[in-house]
Length: 590
View 1: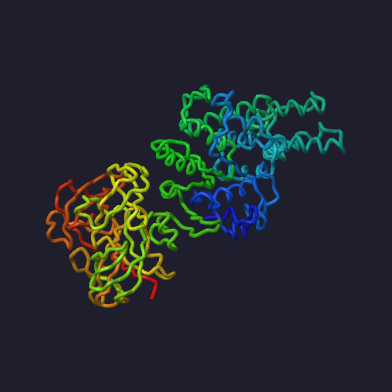
View 2: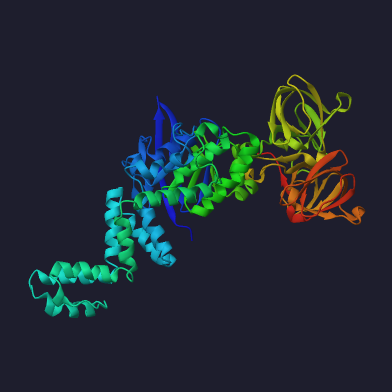
């Protein structure tokens, strides 16, 4: 079971009378990759700054390992931060930038790391090393940590225990020649020294010299006492960290000679070399181009898993959050809207805000007209069976990639492009249709001001009420098929010209509904397509690295289909849908 590491309790913060964070509560587990996701101004960076100690809330508490750190200065917290601006030192090369924290920080962990390195070198087991790390946590400065490491090793050395016993006894009994051999034997130290030949302190020195080749604790103690030890540890840690962030060969490179992605790796390396318990990342990918951002997402996740530390990542990019996170915290207006895994938020957004923010779906007010027709955007559309009554006010959901752009003559609705945004290999168009803005996804480029004709298949129009009990059905992360349908009778719905069994019994006969089918919920009928419930033509097929993402045209509707099997573009494809994979939705207004 995951161990709770961080607790934010009832955090409130106001700026000039405006609520920035309102009664925020959040628990974060050890070794978890958590993303704070939201639009600008939602409070995600403010939350990060409070965790880092750069900002103190008006009320509330922050706990790490059950202990309050609300009054602890930032430099004492087990936290490092990677900012949007990397703040690298231009006069230092890559290695020097990375080493800076270990060399100069008053809270450097150079001796913490040095002790672990020695124990690993001498092949101690993982449990013993973990105990040593736990012991070293109590020391906050390099001076304290050096002393603590020496004390840890001193107490494990039979030679040192023997020397301490001899010194203690000598304080009350100066006849050391009489008890020297007995003390050595009692502590399992085998010696060939003759105490008759040496003065007391000379004898202790010779005993230590004699035992050094066989006493590994004594050897490690001597290495820590060597004035070169700190530099050796720093060099070793810099080498390991450079390898971790894929910068081997760039050690002596000037910062000005690095690309943006390489500079970011240096910033991350500098932040993690001290092995913080928690790493805060404030939109560190925002300055990179698309290809580098995509590459760094996977590298960041690999680094987090390799180090085994907690990452708290801030972004407004849904794709970044979905790609890297163990847990996503969706924020809006200083409050947490939903906490969950990427899959959980994908499958069940808690409310309309999350559904729209995660998937940029079009959720449009409409009216159910009866007989498989619905009105929205000032136009009547055919839809599949709905569990609504004639005249019901509903919400109609159309995924952005379910609008097809056609010539103006063949269009059902016509709109004007107000904004064009590039996203990966596609364009997201904001289109004004009868004074309502809708999102349309296309692979073709259009200009702001262009008029576009749009059609949407009845199967891609989903109808639902957005009350608290049913709002979670509007899961819309990138590509759900939301289709208008008609509820025929109990457990039976019609959409895309076909009739399907479904598990829903709460709609009225003849009601228009929104039907939601996820891309991965289709079963493919490849060899005999006509045996499918639906038959369509494959328009595109792209391998994502995990599955094939296909667009299949069924009638006038384009469906998004995910499967491990590929079907060639232009081929006919049959589709089947199990009854439990068909979700129906309707309006909350009555």
